[in-house]
Length: 122
Image 1 (cartoon, rainbow, N blue to C red):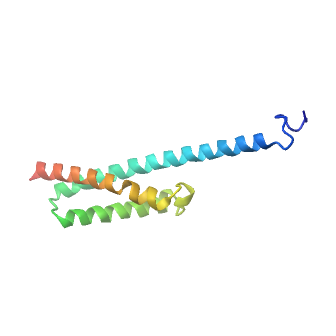
Image 2 (image 1 turned 45 degrees about the vertical axis):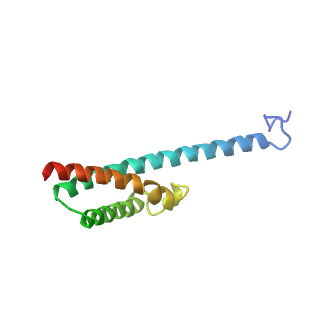
Image 3 (image 1 turned 120 degrees about the vertical axis):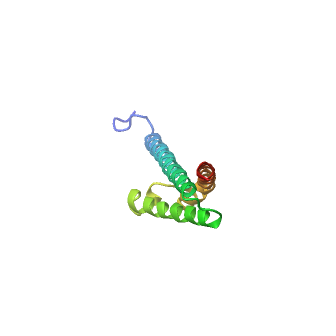
């Protein structure tokens, strides 16, 4: 066994592979954490904007227009201020992770809060 290689491999591949897989696993853990934080942020934004739309008695396309304006404004603010303009450092597939994966979830939460607060006020 070589003194410089504690694994006993002639080329030290086991150490390199285990370090690479641990680094990859840690990065995936970070990506999952970032996705959960983003979803939590957008959930709150969607619910609050839905309640505000209901209180203001927005109807039909005005409410949906308001949702999309707020959704994409918060998305841009998140990218600029939280991700410092480089979301690819924090997410694997930026477009899918930030837009498409959460859009329906946030839209449904928005509609639920919107109709609930609209019914309470109206």
